[in-house]
Image (cartoon, rainbow, N blue to C red; front, side, top):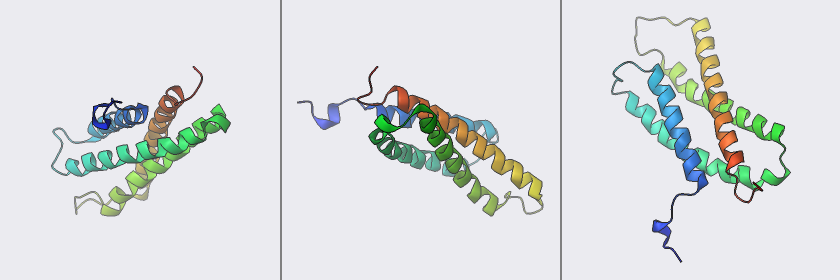
Length: 139
């Protein structure tokens, strides 16, 4: 038997880390160049989300046999949208960081819409990877 520490990472870690890389690239695309020190908070958020994705994959795979494709991808889109919304809220509550800027309600609406759409996109990528590499699934 192979010792636990010598085993290669399973598909859940591969998918979760892949998510983390994609999400970090999306965050970097929207960040100042070079990123400010505050970007470290986003790296911490990304690491936390990697752990959440890995944890959620177990639930997804436990119901994979009775979940059809439409429901599977709807679930991925919904969880992605919720994640995008949860990521957007702290930034909206904190403000722009620039005290002289007054952000309009339209700007907030655009911010939330973009973050939800990014969440849906990444959620669908995770759902696709989870469906492809689902343990016990007939290939």
